Length: 112
Image (cartoon, rainbow, N blue to C red; front, top):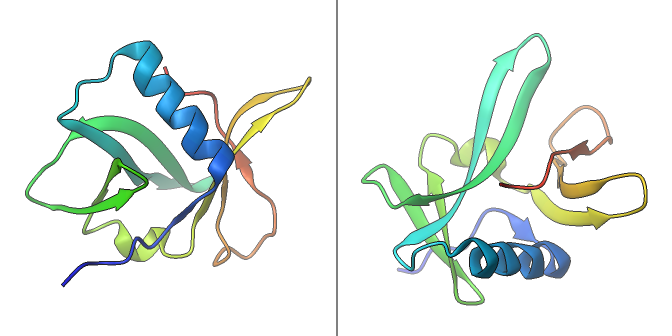
């Protein structure tokens, strides 16, 4: 049974991710890891990075991109929307969590 990815990666974000993979020479056996970080005073944040698949991961394919989400993080990222903002004031990935109490999105730095 094929699983449906619990997050929505917008076209601009997908294009930027593929560009980073090409520019940085990310190996073919790595996937895009989507997860959560922290839960202290400032609350939970989201992360993007490249990693090898682990036993604890669910794996999804989005337009040829292997996406990895740790099974323990899945419930926290359901419905998450990932986009890319490229404006004069900032540049980076945005995460909109429709399950959060606030409608604000979190702007993260571009992945290195």
